[in-house]
Length: 346
Image (cartoon, rainbow, N blue to C red; front, side, top):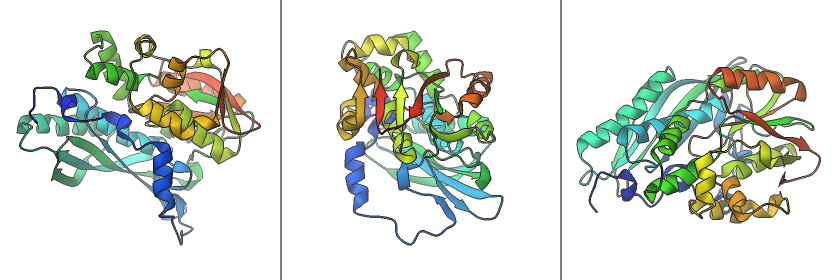
């Protein structure tokens, strides 16, 4: 294996498309159930929460998460930025404030020049600086494929903690970023992505989900998560299962990346899309008019995707104002929670 200037050529997958398929992951976790859960553990691996939360006193709980993956882009600095943004997102998705991070670095030392590795870590450090935190340490190993990510630590008032299972009947469903990043990454690997779509991809995947902190202060926000490797359908299903409700989605309201739509119609998408659908497609109900490309977009893995918010109808406009004020200009209400189970899209 040699380095030709394209980081993506060194990995078999990239970004959150590297995730183990949801059905396989579920089978793996069944063999190691968590036992003797202390009351201080407010959130663990149950219902696939974005981070673990451990209460340390009446007003503070520690939020901890980790995320890492292989290159989704060829530029090493941008790869570092995307990986760090994605990892910190899980802190914001719990309504928490980041405190510090630890770096996770696995690199083929005999393949990649040291200056390329330095650019990756510099990209991660730049995002942490934007989030107001520092990388306080970490761990590194010599690997076959390049891997980078963070352990991110945050803090939240337990009363303001936002889990992904708190949706209520009649709640609005709001998505803050458009779908299609995984499709763009697949096109990039095939060298079929336009310059403008590449720049949009970088802009979206390096946009920190900072509004999660402000949203946690709203009593009308009942549940919060971010859309990552399991796609919109998968993460919305997690919310629906946790609330014992059904998510009813209007396809025309979902914000999408225009070039991603054009590409997926040409059968350009990641291998994670069909793996995702295989794991949860039986819980999805699609309108008769919907096509295969729409299914691949719903299951498209989003690296550093947007926030997915469940809020009361009365809070909908306020939530959208908070998101748009922080630069999430394409945030939209995409549906609502109703009686039933699963996710329906029409």
